[in-house]
Length: 407
Image (cartoon, rainbow, N blue to C red):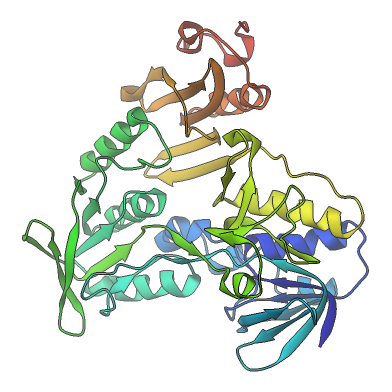
């Protein structure tokens, strides 16, 4: 087999790269290689609407199942690339087949980071990354009274909200002093901690795990202080490990992901990388090399690659944005708050509609908006221009952000 473009990874980024190639008029052959048996689908709803039964499986599909063949895109599913030969311009699958390429797009995302403690492989210990993960959790919930969630990031908090809605007792463990510590300021962390506690979550920060207990199946979690929590289910949400092994083995530059330039090109000829696994210099992080784990980043980098392959290369410069749904709270984030030196609280968290604005050197670099869509939309433009506005003005929720004077 040989294709003009081979895309490895049939998630958000890989699927969108194939779609964009066709929309831009690319007429060559395209193969989309996916490790799962399902056609491309959206992953964010897995830890939210899908587990709650609010969104059926068919609604998660990025395109209807017959779309791909209709666009001349070959889906090679239940297939995993185990090696890349950049000289021969071919990849090898786990079953020994080789697939040649003219251009290779690596869009594999990452694998859930596992616990390293004893008992981490017991039945009943789960991550939430694929449909199979979510289905496995749902299949066990009938026998679950209490669940322990490890990790206070978005996945952990969303899973906690879902399980509380489903009537389960939930303990959430975070080893750091606060939830969302890596992605948000203290104000937002404090708000979400209070919300989860108000909804009945037993939330414990600065708490580590010594072992998962059980014989064959989890029956509890032993904490670093020696105490134990009885439970029948554990969900682990402690980040991902970029799935870039074959590329790095083939000689691609990288470490925490695979390094790409402003056109999403790796150091290997005619090999691109996009999405969660692509380490790139981001202007919203002052040019620091980072990975962005978001649908926005996957889609925008897919467009960047499709344009490069079709002869219209344009540097990646998209604005980062994210979202999270927990209970009746919709969090929308624009920009990157890392490195901020000042924080402005806009509105009253007690009203459950407010924003947190992050400044660096006087410039607005990010905004977390909770049930405040107008702030989110208007802050996006200010973040993109690096606007300087007096903190007192930013804090005045009676005035729209778009009407505030620049300094």
